[in-house]
Length: 257
Image: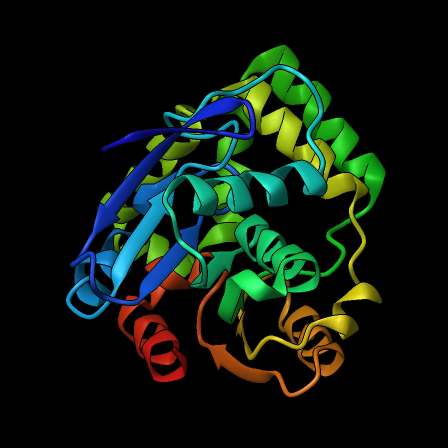
């Protein structure tokens, strides 16, 4: 995996597929890394040049120890596109990655050909909840929050029938740097895109999870209602829908892009 310097830090990036193919960028959720997209990359790299990166503070990307902002995370993505000499891409983000996607659709529409935002929200939770999580993670690390997070990320039936997949994601949570996780919690806490996303003119697909307690189907419906011409797809899954129903997620994504 190449290391790419962008916006002042070093990013871990993985690229699959032919260089001549259209570029498709994936952005991970809070607490995971680029490997959350393994199933999609395996399938779509036959048609696209698939670029995955560990968001600032995640995986093998550097994790500066200070609060992040969505302007920072958005400019990270733009700087990565510049470093990789990608003028225009298709972009797919889930949860926090979807919030980055909405920022890009608003602030850098000339760089985005098509936008997919999944299991995300234009405003995500109350500030005090994020503040409590920042304090907890900085004090005790990642492991104490894991059981609650996994319960929200996957339905009970999926956790029972696919324990190895849940364990894989659990390992991503445990290896996320607490400083990076806390920094991204601050970014999510402070951003409110409910009204600005109406300025997005990029063709957009919104994917929601019908059993997602973190970013509900109602949150997906709101985003779709605010972005002119946006399409909406509901999947029978909880928060990490690309992992819980990978084939249906990939089909929805591929049909759109």
